[in-house]
Image (cartoon, helix red, strand yellow):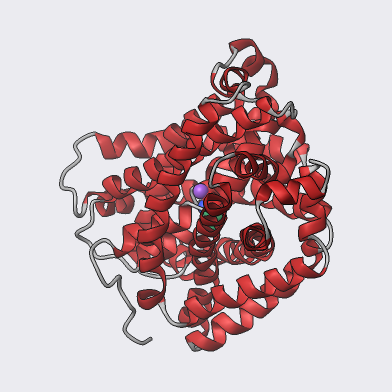
Length: 440
Ligand code: PHE
Ligand code: NA
């Protein structure tokens, strides 16, 4: 095997990992997951899940990746033994399917970005009699959806083929701050809307009764969203940590990634729900088009909305790109490490396959719901559960030693991490997985 690349700068890893985490999961998926889950009840379960399970889970993937320095298939095999390569195979499969429709949705954002060049968002709305939902379908499905999926996949393949150093790091440095500034500005504007109060009540004031009553649907939904948004359960964080030196403090890096990711999703909610309530739209009705409806409404009514809209949709496309790259990188790293394929051929060949698998989802939103539901509620939770079993039960001592590199002796904390994984987290994940399968 040739000398493996490592991150070119000390911050390269953290940038790439934040870039992978922050994406459509925060801007596109989170708001409609909250809407599906009935608002604040979902938010609470989700935040608890991120803190209590997402954090230990991201550390587990880091440890496996850095310890082995390999792609998920090789890493799981080296860490757990021969049979674990099949779990790694599932990870590669998840990456392929997830990227196939992720790219199509990213294409919708490109469409909304381009729409800003064609006219103001207010004009677009007016030409559809204010029916933002119709505008959405009209603008995105059919031919343009295929073309945009093609463009997005081509860009993803190009960046991955060039290798991790040149490709990934720069874009993220621009994207994350831009997204935060934009969302904060939009949230301030949303605060001034008539329906803002009702929006905040829906989003932010949970009712313990609702949680208790609906926990069996809230739990798997929150689990799926948490793993999706943090890029967990299919080996991205294993792969990225495999290019990492031993001097990094993994807990700090995990906290940074989770902080940015959760903050950006939360901000997106602060924009979407006031807009929905002020426009008299039912928050649960938007589904996968929630963000497009609310943002078109917003940019149609804000002074300078056309430019802001362009910047917003464009920035989300960059965010999606840095996530898509991480997905393709998992599959590519597998082909390079395990099969000896060269980087260009690996990225191009598998990218083409992913492109084809995504084609049905350009055709009807039903396919998006089908793909996304299965990935999110079932496969990612399964993947995360497997990593937990590996770290908690198969080789916990190795995990503790690896975690403490770059940090020093953690006293009892590392043990607490292992024990949290071993029993309570695994139980919650088994229940989530079961409920997720039943729901699906
Ligand atoms: N975390 C990404 C997002 O929120 C999606 C993703 C999931 C990327 C899994 C890689 C792996 O958009
Ligand atoms: Na995310």
